[in-house]
Structure formats: C-alpha cells, structure tokens
Amino acid sequence: MHPSALFAIDGLLTDEERDIRQAVRQVCDREIRPYVADWFEAGALPARELARSLGSVGVLGMHLDGYGCAGLGAVAYGLACLELEAADSGLRSLVSVQGSLAMYAIWKYGSEEQKREWLPAMAAGERIGCFGLTEPDFGSDPAGMRTTAERDGSDWVLNGTKMWITNGSVSDVAVVWARAEDGIRGFLVPAGTPGFAVHDLKRKVSLRASVTSELVLDGVRLPEEAMLPGARGLSGPLGCLNEARFGIVFGAMGAALDCLETALAYAAEREIFARPLASFQLTQEKLADMALELGKGLLLAVHLGRLKERGELTPEQVSAGKLNNVREALDIARTCRTLLGASGITLEYPVIRHAVNLESVLTYEGTSEIHTLVLGKALTGVPAFH
Ligand SMILES: Cc1cc2nc3c(=O)[nH]c(=O)nc-3n(C[C@H](O)[C@H](O)[C@H](O)COP(=O)(O)OP(=O)(O)OC[C@H]3O[C@@H](n4cnc5c(N)ncnc54)[C@H](O)[C@@H]3O)c2cc1C
Image (tube, rainbow, N blue to C red; front, side, top):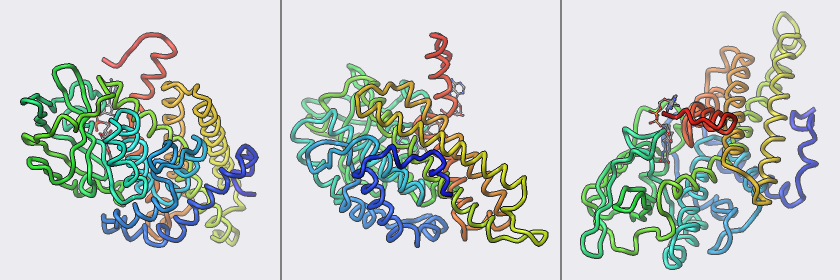
C-alpha cells in the first residue's frame, strides 16, 4: 500500500488538482530528479533554464490571477509545491520565492505599471525575482531592520545589507524592504542598478541546489515608481511570508514522502540476518509511525488549503501547519536515514539530501521557535517574543 493511500488523500482532491500534481511530477521526473544530486554536490544549478521549464508548465505564480498567471486554487498550488519538494527543497524554494514572495509582493502591493512590467515575464520564467527582508543582524525580528530608504528629490536612495536571500544572484529584480520615514516600504531593485551588488553565500551544507546570496545596497538610487505603493509597515512583507509558508506546509510533506518511499523500497530489498529489513518489527514500527505522521500532515495541508480557498485561513493556522509539517518531515527524513544504514549517508539516495535541506526549511519563513511562540500567543493571549 502506498503511504498516502492509508488516509485516502487522493479522494479529497479534484480531477484538476490530480492532473496538476501529475504534470508537475512529470517535469520533476524529466528535468530535476536525474540531475539534482549532482547539482547538490556541485552547489550549483541551471536556475534560468529551470525557471523557464517551470514557467512553461505554469507553476510560477500559479495561485495568482491575471498578468499571465494561472489563477489556480490553494490546494493545486500546494500539490505543486509537494511534488517540487519531493524532488528537492531547493527547487521548491526557487518556485516559492518567485511566486509567493517576489511575484506576490508585486501582485498584491504593486502599481498597474509594475504588475505589467514584471508579472507576465516572471510567470513565464523569463525573469527571476528574489525577496530581501532578512539582514545579517535581523532574521526573526525583521522590525529591527537597518536598511534605509531616504528621499532625495523625487528619488529614493537605499542603503543596507540583506542576507540569506534565495535566488539573489540569478534575479532580474529584488523586492527589497527598507525603513523609510513613514515606516517599512517595499522597493523593486532591478539587477545591475548602480550601487547594488550581490554575492553568493558559499560553504552551505543545506539547500545546495539553491542560490543563496547577500544583497548589498550602497547608495542605490531609484525613481519614485520603484516603490510598491500598496505596502506600508511590516504587514507588507509578512503578508508575502504567509503565502510562502502555506506552500511549505505541503512542500515539506513532499520531501517526507520521497524519503518514506525510498525507505520502503530499500527495506523490501535489503536482506539482514537472511531476512528482508522490512520483515522486522522494529522496522515496521518505524514505517507505521512515519506513515501516520505523513498522513496527518497531508490531511492538515489539504484542510488548510481548503480554508485558504474559502478565504478563512488565519496566520496562526499557517504557523501550525508550517511548524508541524516541517518538524515531522525532518523527523521522517532522519528515521528513513537510519533504515538505509550507511547507504543513507550518500547522495545515491535522496534521503540525507532531504534531511539536510529540511534543516533550512525549519529555519526560514519563520523558525520553529517563532511559530511556537505564535501559537503560544494565540492560545494564551500573552506574547512571549521579547
Ligand atoms: C537557505 C536559506 C534561505 C533563505 N532565504 C531567504 C530569503 O529569500 N529572503 C529572506 O528575507 N530571508 C531568507 N532566509 C532567512 C531566514 O528567514 C532567517 O534565517 C530566519 O528568519 C531566522 O533568522 P536568523 O537566521 O537571523 O536567526 P535568528 O533570528 O538569529 O535566530 C537564532 C535562533 O534564535 C531563535 N529565536 C529567535 N527569537 C527567539 C525568541 N523570541 N525566543 C526564543 N528563541 C528565539 C530562533 O528561532 C533561532 O533558533 C533564508 C535562510 C536560509 C537558511
């Protein structure tokens, strides 16, 4: 029995949703899975080609309406994230940052001109975007950011540094959040703008099939039209993060599913003490426990997706989904690693790659501690962040 059959998840999906999942799976099977271990090992990937392939199947900004975007439902988008992350969390990150952070910021807060200029090309994967919120000294507490945006005549001048920025050096446009006189504002910074430098972060052990960069803004002069008119205050970037976190609720389960499928196949074939590994009770307990957590995580993801489609999903529910599903996915990846024994530490199997990738997923888009505090506040009414 396939692990997701235990909870009859497919029965909760529409035909269209199953078709979309299948289409994304086929792209991953054709263009990502055969190569991803090599990209991970090399710490480099053909991001531009991949963006164009993913754009051609419509997954970039697929949950947005108009401007070349498909306007699909939340569950369909979640399933695309699941399939991408079953291939590699780095590829899902590329798509999440493009669609849910950079495109969403423009779609939600941008002017008509900004939307027309950027969204169709970004949906097609011809242009790539990144999202610069985190700074070297401000990750969990973005309200403390030091990047500034000052008026000079009708222009804006940006100064500061953004850190850990996915897609940074392959982006055509950076959505940069900066402190202006009237609060935090968002700006579209095209690549190549004088004073704007991007450096890739090296020596990563996690998310190696993903570009992570530092953005340096040194007197970057932008015209008035570069500001996102609809975003004012921290609610602007936080609104985008909520979108991306939702994708992770599904995505993390994709990584977990790929680990569990790998471990099931391995346990069936591997003979130990002249018996298949799958035949031992300790093995079966691990497999049963993982199938339970996977099924519960998938049910939660679909439930949150349906709430989102009805416009009822709250940020606290997204925190609950992100916290639970990433934590359980990481646990599943580690347990699957044990089932593979020494083989589990090599890139011949996807399991250790998923496990180390999920360490990043646990930290970005709100760390597990921050989501725990969000739930703590919701339950008690008392904020314990600082
Ligand atoms: C691979 C990768 C890609 C990323 N991509 C992007 C991107 O595209 N754009 C972007 O803007 N950012 C990105 N980030 C940054 C990410 O969002 C931050 O790393 C994250 O918010 C945590 O910030 P920090 O690393 O500064 O950790 P810190 O905020 O310094 O936290 C350190 C530890 O303290 C804990 N902590 C913090 N506050 C509290 C508290 N009140 N109580 C108890 N414990 C607390 C944290 O949970 C964590 O365990 C990325 C990060 C990674 C690793």
